[in-house]
Picture 1: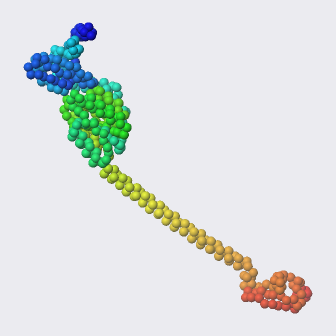
Picture 2: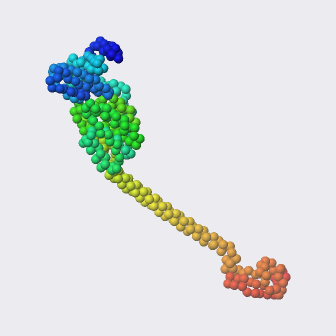
Picture 3: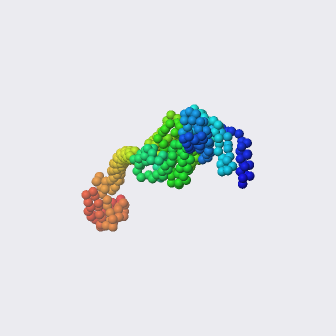
Amino acid sequence: MRTVSRMVGEWIGRLGAVWMDGQIAELRPRPGARNIYLVLRDPDVDMSLTVVADAALIGGVSPPLEQGQRILVHAKPEYWTGRGNLQFRAKEIRPVGLGTLLEQLERLRALLAAEGIFSPERKKALPFLPRRIGLVCGRNSAAMHDVLVNVEDRWPGIPFEVREVAVQGVQAVAGVTEAVQELDAISDVDVIVIARGGGSVEDLLPFSNESLVRAVAACRTPVVSAIGHEQDAPLLDLVADFRASTPTDAAKRIVPSWQEQFSIISALQARAFSIVSTRLERESTLVDDTLRRIRARVAAQIDGAGQDIEHLAARVRALSPAATLDRGYAIVTTTMRDIIRDPGELAIGQQLRVQVAKGSFAVEVRQNSAEES
């Protein structure tokens, strides 16, 4: 084993110094110690290295180093064969200024934009009324309180899945990313809110981390960014499906107000009643007008038919025997009601009946004109 350890040490010893960019995850200064150890963490992945530096080198850095700070370290790897430990001996340490960080963020933004991660076509619509809301926020934070209280006020009873994690410092990226992935895997979580109550550009750097941005882009659940920093929007704002200006604004965006919906429904009911009433009134007027026209038409037809009946009755009367009788004529019939048309048909002494306008009477044939002729 010692042969392997020695060979590894010799190989590492031949490596030269390298520049590393990282975040101070742990700083352990000890009074009077010649060496100071710090843990340098990769800001994008869960990976760290131990760096040892002379106390004089650490003391000469301005401003003084502190946990969570981004630094550039020029260091040479060292391998301790006895313990099998790898560490880096710092030769130079440079704090990363805000300008440098912003330049790095701009390069990352351009890279991700070129991939289409921020494209509007990828944005998912927020649900009208989510079954369950996922919330990622700081532990017992004001941002959590703002979201919970305002959602309850707007639509009481909606359940939450809350993940309280670090939203600042070296653990923020891993904590927020893991929480988002957990919530995205819950089937009835219809929207995820990532909330924080603002902060400095440095405080918000975790929300521009490439790993977190890609994790949000991969979510099947709509994500709302509610970081609350208007001046320098973190990259999370660009990849999220919706950007809220504050946690309170996020609550207003993810659930409707029951008072507003009740007012809308009441207005729609009133409008529907007005439309139906107007339609019924119009139809009633149309029916009344139609009935009046029908009645007028029927009355006219009845009047016309009455006049036709009178004319027909007059014609019938003019053509009837009664009209002839009224003019003084008479109808002579036998006792069997046969009309006499020829005197030659009669015999002397034959009984006849004479019908006149006012009645009838019996006669006897005493003379037959046909015989005289």
